[in-house]
Amino acid sequence: MTAELTLPDDYRPSVDEPFMNERQREYFRRKLENWKAELLDESRNTLEGLQDGTRSIPDVADRASEETDRALELRTRDRQRKLVTKIDGALRRIDQDEFGYCEETGEPISLKRLDARPIATMSLEAQERHERREKVHRDD
Image (cartoon, rainbow, N blue to C red):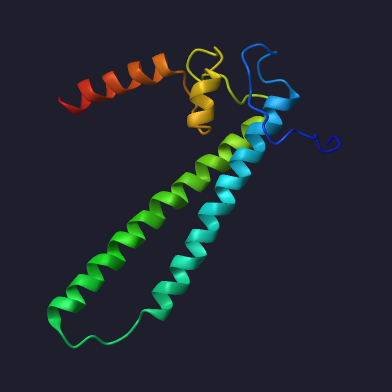
């Protein structure tokens, strides 16, 4: 691996530079790593809160409300766990120089889309086609 690349704090990928150059890859790597760290930190806090929150509540309505809250929190954490898996996949694609290219067409994914959703694996057009096909087959 090469020496760590220094990026200015205000750096944003631009269409005026070569697509997925070293600076852009480093920008997205850091963005993904920071996002993953935030999710893992939230997950740790949730687990601690769930462990601390185990107590006997005599009122049935209060107990049901708390159980509903816990179930919702666990579903949220499960979605975040899946998101961490997708982040890991994006980081692997950066390492393999595949990041930023549509898995369906091979074309570059727009920087605007990648900045908004760095785990994207398809261009906006390919994603829309995929969702239309999915909707058609779901309606069968």
